[in-house]
Length: 280
Length: 207
Image 1 (cartoon, helix red, strand yellow):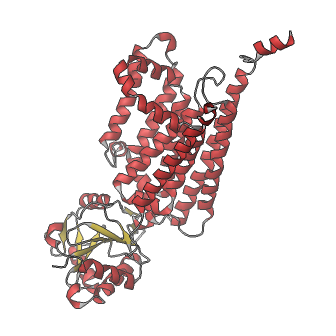
Image 2 (cartoon, chains in turn orange, red; image 1 turned 60 degrees about the horizontal axis):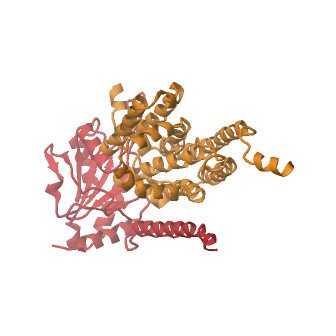
Image 3 (cartoon, chains in turn purple, green; image 1 turned 120 degrees about the vertical axis):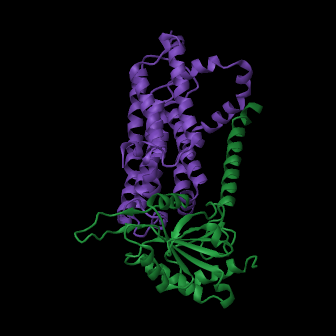
């Protein structure tokens, strides 16, 4: 197969291509038009683009073919859509670009977008966000649902898009660049707690898949594999990918939040005025 | 005081919303228990193909309309899955009431066109059942058909004698008289279960 065959989509999805073009287009437009002092540095732009392109690559290249017919590649695809891609996008802090783009939206449209804001705030409630984050993994890996999702083209796209969007919501909540001291962003302690909490059920699920004797996901058996590979090996690798890298992502996330919290220690002392008053 | 209740409101609201979503989803995916095989109604597109039959002529899905079609992907050098499945299907068809047998069709699609010539496929499927037909085509057409039914196939590297293994779907896709995808027979389904489902399907709006 020629290189180009690996780069063209296996299952061409105009909506997906349009989505990625719009995201990169708006980001680029924002970068060019926004005031220089707010513009993110080259490193951050690179991290953002790499995150977006990773998600694109697993959805609209030959990678998608292998994801449909190999369980472990499918787990790798979701690792990128739900974890690594959104992790990088959120970490690159596109907030200044988003703020600038928002300022360009006409007030009338801004008003019409309000319900979207309510839905966003609802989904970003820490309990709901973490429930959704883990719940979606369990939902799509529940064997009968997984079977249907791999058989139906529509369900397959719903699955991948729901994983990507939910990944963006969750990691954005965790890496919200605003300080909890001066805004209503989630406190660092809570962020760390969420990261630890979501890691546990993922580890349990991954270990369950790794240690199950029988075939948990027979859809790959039923639908044929991309190449002849023992089913046990496929399931074992898939289980490991569900188990170890997400747990490592949580730990990495915790370290990044800890670093941020330690940097802010002592910088802003919200209670100092009060304390001074009581001590004098 | 009224302030105190405010924070509780969104939480109960979110819980209700979550439960509604969960209830809706279970509704969507609940299986119809009356089938022994897996119900795939609405999950897959209707039957469509244009392949070469064992006499070397082109055959399309429309030409087989009106029959219950059981589509199976395989290859004639297949050591285990294909003979076992074809054996099961032909026995299930033989066990059906006589007048319903002629409404069924076992469609064996060879995904190994390099080794499987029409003659070879003909003697292969003829060995199992007179209700079976064998089809094949160029690899591109076979890839398109298998992609349509969310399946694939792959070839192992050939050994010194030129023999190679082919990975393919182990399932049988069942289409009703109109060509709508209805059932999926997993490899472990028994002959009796297959027969029961086939009879039910064949008796549905029987002409």
